[in-house]
Image (cartoon, rainbow, N blue to C red; front, side, top):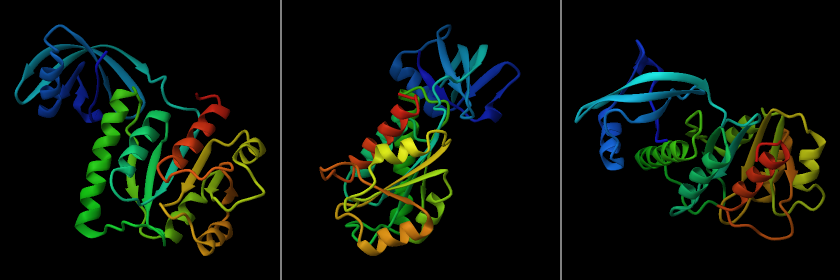
Length: 244
């Protein structure tokens, strides 16, 4: 069933009100009056609705039933991904949302090839949040994970350290594997996953992360690309927490 996110304030009086962009999607999907859709308020509630009106300015759908979303993971996992060039972040955001990330935070790192700021960063974040919305609709999420910026590497590490299980994925780690770190805290309800840019983290950055309280972990003997590492770690978290 087609899925659309609307603001909770647009659901009242037994009707869900959708905007012009959604109405355009209706036409593209050939959705007409009388057909059923799923409307989500972004707060974990799914509304089964019957379309009653479609115009160029928007659409209206009568609420048939409401249920809590069953697609949200039991663990809240935030992905911290270093800024990367090209479309690599597009992939990280799209697949992280599909896999169940609750939020994606992008941050600068010493070896980042691309370091957009100002208007360039705002434009990129707008694009990434559109990708997150599309991925949330496609994967039937109950929320729209936000893509947010961290102003600096220390700020990102400080934020990531607030999770019950803060993981710093470091290619030079030789002692602690990802599985061991996850097994050591099986009841963690909040997890942060920090992964680096194309050139990896510097030793100084790794030490700062440890000083902030993050757990340095290895993702195995192979060097993963910057767009692969967060998805591999996120998949492991979801699998071992019973969410995959």
